[in-house]
Image (cartoon, rainbow, N blue to C red):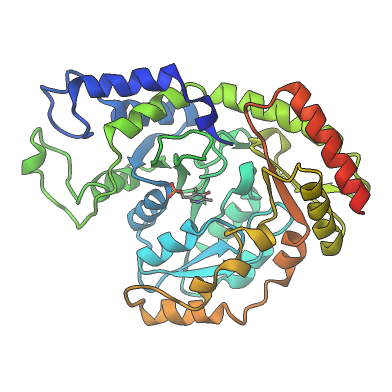
Length: 398
Ligand SMILES: *Cc1c(COP(=O)(O)O)cnc(C)c1O
């Protein structure tokens, strides 16, 4: 997944162009910046590479989600349906706009289970937020149909699946809006950063102002801008955008390497008796940043993990169910509604309700799932050695 593995002269050149002028801010200073507009350039590149009409850069992926929800009119009194397996940013963003996160089960795609989404719809539901976890995608046809039938907004969190596609469309460009994160471990990195993508001009215009204190950006003098509504500062800096500009040009290379490395490693793991891989609604669109696999039982999976550790090949593998911060089992702060400032009552009640909500279907999947992160730097020899060692260690444990 990580673009940081390919940080080099291209990134340094882009950053140096900004350092030459010293104009680190994305707006204004038209004279001294000498024609250097890295953020604008990266936004244009995002629209071209991913095929969407508009792109608004932000300071992070979390800020991108918050911005998208605000621009889509999601707020107090609204419920947003999200998966129980995701990064914490999902519920952080929902809570930040005053809405209620409604957590539901995943299926073997490791993303939203369409049946669970349907069952969770109430008169307050406003938005469905699939999270395309670990490089691959949710069942978008099914989710889109549900949103159409129930008049709901579809917002894609594609932060972990940059470059993945579904039936020919780039993930993040299918819903009313979609987001990427460009944090340090994502497929393209800016150091920190994110983007909202949309085909809706009105949503984009709102994102543009919202991320810069509500400035309408209509005049030539930003200081004299009007403020049609209240916004925040979720701006990206020119230094960060410069890094992303170099990285986005390498995306095709990253994806080609990921796919090749993923396929080769998979050819070894496929030989494990009873192993299964996550189901991928459109195989051709898997960005292949991870290889996610499942063993028949939880006990077998735990034994396999111990065996991988003993063999010294567990590094780079993620057992989200117990060891990581991506699944409901580990979100005690969420389930206890622990915040610094007061939540609204609907939010607090919903969070406390998570303590008794069953996620049995997700547990049955997550307790058997391990995701292997695919490095861009592996040589073929290293993958073969890793593959052989992993195959032997897992098979021994079963
Ligand atoms: C990384 C990530 C985010 C948030 O991105 P930041 O840039 O770190 O704020 C959101 N959702 C998912 C699924 C992520 O992996």
